[in-house]
Length: 396
Ligand SMILES: [Cu+2]
Figure (spheres, rainbow, N blue to C red):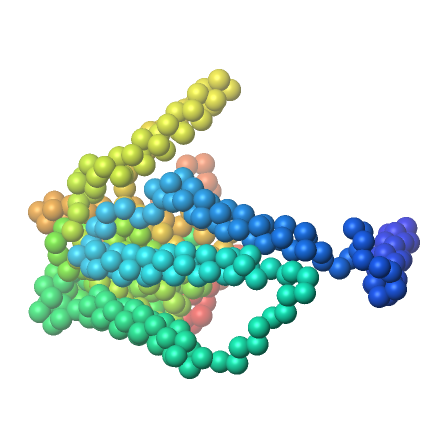
């Protein structure tokens, strides 16, 4: 510790001496005549800086073009929802405006820095103001920004507002977030999701559905999000613990998932998973991923490990709020299929009520080799620390 302090003192002393010599040099400027080593910029220095400004402008332009070619394919491809194209055109309009403005203003900035570089004997021209110029560079951004904001508001209401007719025929799905996974619950035949609260979490009822609510009786939980193509879907988002964000990039949808409240987002899926797998951009991405995987597999096989599975495209629901250590892996597969296939899939699922009833009738058999359970008392909650048990304790 002492040696560390000594080193710190020496370093600080060094910095202080360095600064003092700099100040000493500065005090000498007036005294000495200008020469090559003087710290005052000469015409040559100013010229070099002027041309460097131009060089930097070239660098910005070349790097922009390079970035577009090299990383352009990372942009989201074909939208898979009805509102997707409108969202994309709003994004494209904003990006084009920024791109054009940036190209022009950066050129002017660097060009003027070059044109008016310092020259011996040259004095700055005093120019008080120009009302016409001020008016022009105020009114143009005002009009452009007002247009963008109005267009944005129009798109927002279009996307967020679901009319009553569509609501009646809609499929209601609850998306439940928790560290670090998703669960979904379909509203069932009645089209209404039963009430839910974290305090009702118990055993197989992992989403905390109020089983006393009539609307909850036909609710269907699922571990995968299936959506029928062309139908209005209305999502209700809930969180068990912290702030999450449900992000479905292919559908251009994202909504915060907030503990203690229900948030909503609705969209109509328009492209089935099978059709999206035939999309040119997606096929290219998949081929690229598989190329990386096959290289990695060859390395693994050489080490005597098992190779990686080839990747097939699937829509994903991702978490887009850093919510903890395993946030990066908080995802759920989304399957978009035609209505008949969807209905068949959903009809084969058990309702939550049935699952809860079943679990109560036959309590889980003890694992082989485990001692016969001594009728677990409620107090065992004390040793368990998962949220299920915590919720039960609160309930009492
Ligand atoms: Cu999360």
